[in-house]
Length: 421
Ligand SMILES: *Cc1c(COP(=O)(O)O)cnc(C)c1O
Image 1 (cartoon, rainbow, N blue to C red):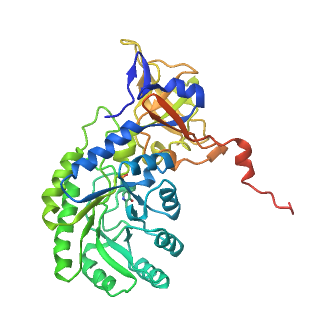
Image 2 (cartoon, helix red, strand yellow):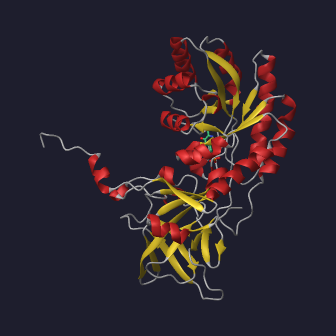
Image 3 (cartoon, rainbow, N blue to C red):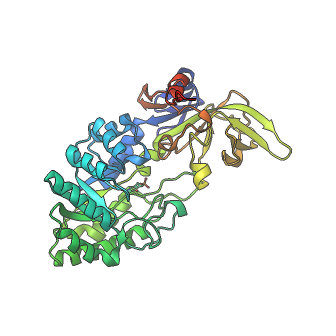
């Protein structure tokens, strides 16, 4: 459920008409709903109630400071995957004790940054990384709390590019080698083993692969404890899917996920961490765009809009589907037109949707791409020298620009022409 609904024929973000924001900010822009972000966080938090737990928002899904602060104020921790995200988390007021650092390629500088600023745990993904972290921590005279990310060799049955828990994926260490790696970790004076980490992929629409992976984690926990390790936290990763398409079957409910986690892992007495990104932010955001031209091709009609692949790359990168809705509600009974919805970028890949049936639209009409709150703005680039799209946050009847559209002077100033040219 989200808070982008029609009221009196206008598409609203909570109590603000998106058309009103468009008039103030210009298109394209991202708009997030605070009530939706809050609702999604609470659903997950409540799903794990009764078990000691921390919901760590995966910041790579949406790292705007206002979004991160909103979630942090609700009690969320965060999962960061770079020094940049770590800095953002701290700037948004997240205490180090609620920051988990994931990622396969942490540099020593990033490790130092997090150890200096405070960190809950590093999820280490390889032995070389473990040795590097040990060295950095010893240099600083501290012990780095670590969980080892294990690869359970489970097929999440999701999109190829967001599957991470199979043998052939680059993430984690094979679960078959876990005991050996934990033994090695326990022998390193700069490390303190605190738990186990697993993350098998993104946009999972079925609980079965999670359960398969978590059963392996439960077995491993028992084994590692028998080996003398103090396994007190289990980080279960993110990956819960969201409905991108109204017509599709609904993905698992957070409450069912929580129930399964309790059933599979509840007896171990571990603190549970989860790292949801998409489930919290995905349906809490839309990308609003304006139709520039309607072009009648020989076989197709093209809706050429002012947003492009550089603003929202998911359709081009993953073939992802985003529902598209007009800001002015279609009159009931009007006959639909079929459009290819494309952006202005000089790439055939700059196509948001093919053969999409919509009530007839004209130049100047506005549309919203739904489910754009996760992996939207964060993946944007300035390809074709298009300025980054602004972000807006709505809460009730108020809205604020939480990242302004850069002006062109600002963009040009970032380049330098050498004196000798
Ligand atoms: C991407 C990622 C997440 C978040 O995944 P979602 O599908 O957005 O929930 C969590 N943990 C790790 C380690 C990730 O790489």
